Length: 371
Image 1 (cartoon, one colour):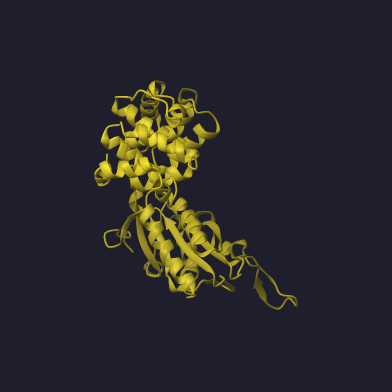
Image 2: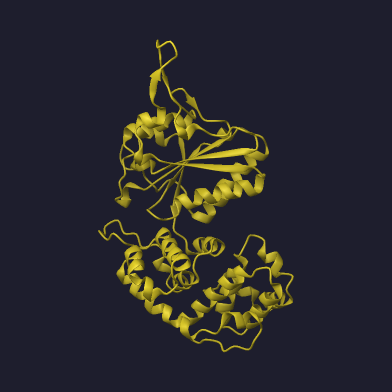
């Protein structure tokens, strides 16, 4: 078979894909249809675009909407061989027949209040002999003598041949058993996830300023360190959990995103020293407004992070909106959009604040045309 063609399958950003699939699965579950009503799904995309993170988000959405516990079994098929999927052969009790010990991946809770997701990651990197063993899983939900429980969703993911990662051509027989979706990078989709997930404010601010640096994968480049949503999450973890001093973390950050981007990140982050005290802004004190574009992106990221961490303190949120009303309109719009990303229903809370309602009346028309 020639390379899988992406021109005739839908392309979605991570947020849209999560929304579509979680909604479909929830409808099936809530109407008591068999989960196998939905075909197994194949997610295609470049390394680091967020395929694995998306599956965990789908699990979270299903759990919240159905009230069921959702367990994800993550299987890296690149590390498997066909025997790993079928199980280890052994003799039966009277040593007349061979039986197959059940692999750990099939040890799933079949209870009605549980939903299982079997995530077959890196399927395109698996040798064709392993892909062939996945035929039965994706279509018949069995391998050899072992059957997946009825409450199990099957989702596969892998890199495209054009990504120049380790990838084998997918046989047509397997491809025809799957619903194919190509994952496209989207800054807005990533930002919504990043705000809710606690991504570091400096990473948020820098990528808002340089959106093209969110995804810098180039299949023709031999660089080992390059920017992807996954690599920026690693940078965020360093800053959140080890040290938030970019100068101190510079060599480690360079090892994740590459030295060129790391230099730009470090240089840009110097604007933080001139920002107003964010706590004072939320306390309602009169604070000077920065003027530079780079500083405004840093300010909106810092205010969003602070608001996320103090989201129930509505009087202080109101103070910050009053301050934001003095920003250039495009940046106050960015900030209000980011506030609405704090959680799914945060807009309803914001609507109880007179300052937010006033802002909507005067600047709400800018919501569809913000920077």
